[in-house]
Image (tube, rainbow, N blue to C red; front, side, top):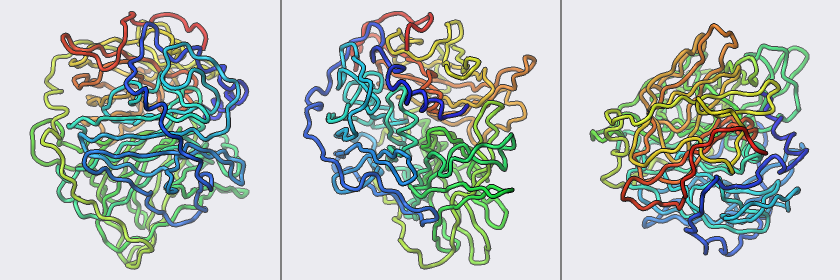
Length: 586
């Protein structure tokens, strides 16, 4: 699907397609942070949202670390237009840090104050009360989602259905990380329905790392650490996709590596790319933490030295250290692969050896992705050229030791043995002209996301459910649920599409489901998941496709988790049954 359909639709009608209300039917809002909305404003930071030139050397993003159990951050959310006409977005700290990596520990408190310093948006639309933040929204509204974290979906927390920050307004987020939060890589980004794609593609994203992974993989402590944030952006040269061979064709979006663009060009016969550069010491073992926080681009990463893919020893996927979080104790066990498929929003952490002095060509590559008959082109292309040399321009920081609580490593204890209280079948689908996208529970009527409708699913805290998520369309989709992780039981009916390595048997928050063939005789591809609602999270939150062009056009739904009997809810909600019916007006 052409990801810019969403942007064009919004440019034409701004927020008319967005919401008549930001609240699910029957809900009331827990005012957990009313004073936060009145926090002192952060002034715009001079310089806009700076970017590096193409072909530049990769620089590690700036980082902020918690101390004594807390991390407090202030952000100016701002935008600028670059010399090619692209609108760029970013979160700037007062000291000039752009989209810094936020480091916390399990059990820490994170406070983020955001001032929206973008120009006043067009087409304001009133929102039905109760509200969290603004009482109307427009084309420059913003909020924040802390992707993958097991934190509460309450006002002032990781809540995206109701929270709106408009131009000139300031809002404070306060997140309490559970003591059993898996140590690994997460991220943050805006999540206003209808305009998520352009702002994420514009760069308003950053990494969030829960420290302490060395507790489960002691060998990574002291290793040089590469934090790589991969984003996508509108093509520099507005090249058109070719007639069909995506493997050697023009990509639908260009990619950036830590804000260094990897731009695509064509001559009469070829497509070529200008990769970012990285200097590395020969043969050094490094710990790479890689986040694909693009809006729409699926990547398949490999380190290739003189045409030979190298071993990647996987340490963590989607923030969860491998083979170490089921409560059995001990250290984790890595998985050796030579490539890793990384859909938008997913993260992977691995140890790899840098090329030796005899290597002539060393590259971080992404391979061609078959996204289906109606999907976008994600062709083979280089992302980083590794330059072997002892004298690197900037010394990498080594992974420090940060002690974590004794409850770490127990989050998923007993999940695989827990009784399943419900089995559900969900599916992705689209209308014929790809103007509406649906995330549907089987038995309900497909409709685009409308937060004024009742939740599609209601469950209870403390339970485990089994979900099958099918793809009934002819392009790939990416399933993500907020607030929890799930256990991957299987990848089913993938047909000619190879199963992603290292995924089955892991705890994830994001997973790709390949395209259906379109042949009525072929079964729908699906993934089988154990959904873990045993944590402390209750309230309303969402699940959706994380190809954000699809999410903006409706491929999202609400789940309500009720408190277990005898427990007090974190978010005040009044129960209204599960939603079945046609959309009443998006």
